[in-house]
Length: 126
Image (cartoon, rainbow, N blue to C red):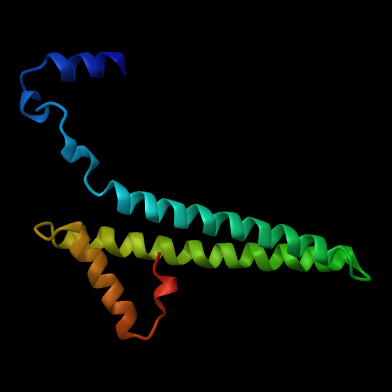
């Protein structure tokens, strides 16, 4: 990695990419912080929700059975969400291969519009 850094810093080929530091690097930082904070809160709430659910499941008459079923449901839900993400990425990759002149973002917007066309909820598009 050190050799790559030296090559990038010393090579004339990459000279135009190093224009110096300016305040434009901080443009959009407020929006990024807002989205990051909302995402962090959502992850915390999801973790706490699952921990509380496990604690409550341990209070029933047969806690072993309820915790096993909870684990199966959680695993199935996780697999289902990942399958949508994988399908989304594969379709975008196929679009990029078939139409190299189009931008990748255009392929993602096409996928979202296709999901809306078929009535699939936006929560399924990851």
